[in-house]
Length: 85
Image 1: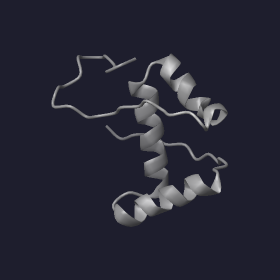
Image 2 (image 1 turned 45 degrees about the horizontal axis):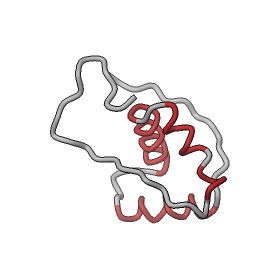
Image 3 (image 1 turned 90 degrees about the vertical axis):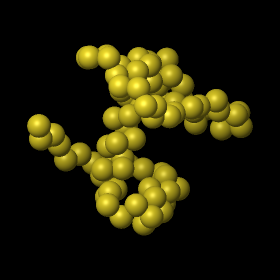
């Protein structure tokens, strides 16, 4: 099934854009839009709302350590379910 995408415009911090550019240089089979979309889709599909809230407000806690773990396992998702949300 083909995925429908929609063109949108966002503002990114220069350092975030630089990190994406560095990633795309190493992984040439993905473009910037695919990388940004895949990161957002993974976060919004695999983290619960409280975890997403913490991710969004991380800028308020720049001096704090972050406890974060993300790993693709060998286990398949249950039909229609999310992993962690």
